[in-house]
Amino acid sequence: MKWSEWKAEHSFLAIFEEFSKIPHCSHHEAQVSDWIADQARGWGLEVKQDQKKNLYIRKPASKGFEGRPSIILQGHMDMVCEKNAATCHDFLTEGIQMDVDGDWLRAADTTLGGDNGIAVAYMLAILQDQQLQHPMLECLITTEEETGMGGASAVEGDWFTAKAMINLDSEEEGYALVSCAGGMRSQFEIPVDTKAAEETWGSFLLQVKGLKGGHSGAEIHHGRGNANQILGRVLGELTSKYPMGICAVSGGNKMNAIPREAEAQIALNPENLEGIQSYLSFLEATINQELRGKDQLQLVLSPAKDMPEIWTQETADRVITALVLCPNGVQSMSASLPGLVESSTNLGVVSTKEGTVLFENAIRSSVGSLKKEIANRIDRLALSLGGKHQISSEYPAWEYREDSPLRDLLVEVYGKMTEKELQVTAIHAGLECGILARAIPDLDMISIGPDMKDVHTPDEALNLPSAVRTYEFLCEVLRNYND
Image (cartoon, rainbow, N blue to C red; front, side):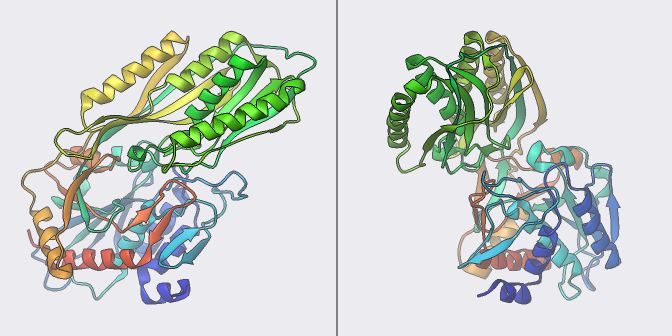
């Protein structure tokens, strides 16, 4: 089926395309927030927009449903803006270009933004639909979810009358999430001292490429390569065998995305180039053997034009140590839920700025004390290397609720529609539910969504048949909601 046919048959997909034409990276949601608000006001709905550009949209109950309790639908409007290094796309001015590949909707060498634009499309389609039967709807569309949930942290709970909420930020059909990990952002800096490079040395760029990356919560357990840590390992190996200098390092674009690419500008004696290239081939083969079945790495060394000053040996040692030893990946597994990651951290972004190297980590855990313990380890590492460490954007875990009429309803409706059992589970990735539970006390919550894969990477894809089935499931739940 062509994309035009999908849109013609399913209104939420046409809305998703229109929404995706408007830039909406985290912290740049003003334009798309205004667009959504204008759409809702045009349908005669009550709209509130707060200082964070969060949107609150209320739609009255359908005829005959006025006596039923209201319900909240919730998702976020921002997206992780990732692209392949060679892709010329400006996320701040350009919309997403879409293409259908079989049953999958993708973007052209960028993230698609199905996480969580599909939630926005679902809500707008429901708000626009005059035939759908439903109780009063209170839609909440937040900002800054992907960078620490800043929008959800500012939500005004007194706007809502509902005591039940369906979050639409899940990424696997047939599963309903009832708990998630909490998280925080960790940043530390290491000061940089420089000196002049040897006159006989040339400037080169060392690149780590080809890795899959992925969502640092949903896919951290796959054991994929972290480009920043691999860069540290490679630099450590090279500097132990050959005289060379490091000028700068960088890698990753988003703290909550496993970094796919990283690079270092280095200075070396061209006489050693053949040996270095040979050793890089050996390291590439060695690491790929370690990653077999999980990832595929490329190490590329090429000439660079400029020759800035290089770091002193002490600075180089400190930065390499930080790259190699910074906690990364799965830190503990849940004892009560087999297969669920309990705590993790992701060294998502490394950047060289004037006089310093910045390391940015996403820490997640469903156990608050473990989240702090990981942060303490990073703090000790930073202090031992002469750096400074700070924590920001901390958000709580969403705790499991024993008694949930909403969960019971979704299980019942799903079973009737599909003759299958809805799988009720938890997730390691962060959702806004924990924060919203503080703003709206005693809120009964559940999270659903269609099949998506490779989110937070340029390979992100949305399964269209699954998106349709999930929308129909959501509409049926609303028809049957009567707590």
